[in-house]
Image (cartoon, rainbow, N blue to C red; front, side, top):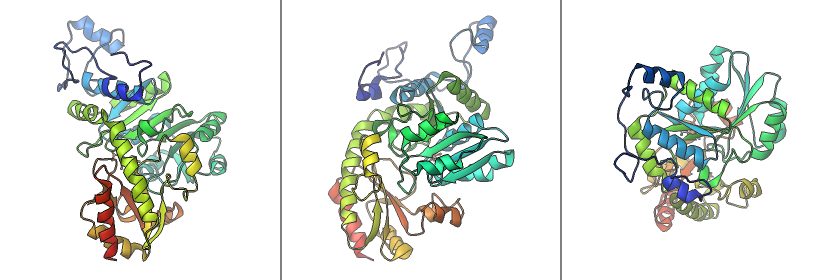
Length: 393
Ligand SMILES: Cc1ncc(COP(=O)(O)O)c(C=O)c1O
């Protein structure tokens, strides 16, 4: 179906659909590694790009392409490429946009492995990086060097909930002839559209809100421009970081309810954040939907809603936070986020353990920080669960 000029929810359901021979109501799974050519000329034409069609699933596949087209449409990009995981998307982003002698400026707080893979692997290929507080635009400007080629931000950051003013950061990138990529995992395209705000590339861990059901791992890159898209696609297929057709089918199914899930999760998160902010055992809380968040106004400007991720510290520090995590019964003590279930975890010893302690402290990922992904359960039950666990401290 042509979803041009259709609303976001209609795109969630129908964008990327293609005409199946049997009129299937949902995108079929083309679980095949290879595709037979009609004849030798057909095969040669496909390889030469003179005809459209499928060759080999690492390069492209109808089920995978349906998902890529849907995601590109949701983010208002020209093309999308999906991956076996979010980290497949991160490593492809770096490999496709940077070469020896280049430099990247990125958010100091971001998903731990997105930073660690740059500092422990890509640095070995002569690529330099500087991690700064991208919530501070002048810190970005100061970090830019003549060889800077990529500005990569997470907004909000994982797990410190710092926002980057995407529009203004994109202006800085453009002025300096730098590509700008945004990890939009924490917001999803329902809440934030980085390409509309001026970014060149959007990254997602599809594992989170987009799939939404904690049953697959996946990643995506969506480009605003055809040349960048072509570069990302080529790098993905050479690196072999492609998604599997069955995985793509699962994401297509999960994403259809994105706006419903996110709306409920945000509604719950606002109540959970208010409960925590007023609880005597909570030392501090960072949630962009609370007036106490220093970027509350920016969140209202660039996000449709403040999301359902929050971080906080418990009075009594790490030991008290540990008691809380060990005593929740409804929320799962587990990494990941953006699923229908509430999750609690400890970034310093879990998702961000791959960063050095100094880098973590500098980025505000202190030992006491607890991260909570608010699910879509009844909010009274989520709050009661937190309350009984806090009572144990
Ligand atoms: C913000 C963010 N980006 C990227 C990733 C990496 O995604 P994946 O775990 O799907 O490889 C994660 C994983 O938690 C994440 O939270």
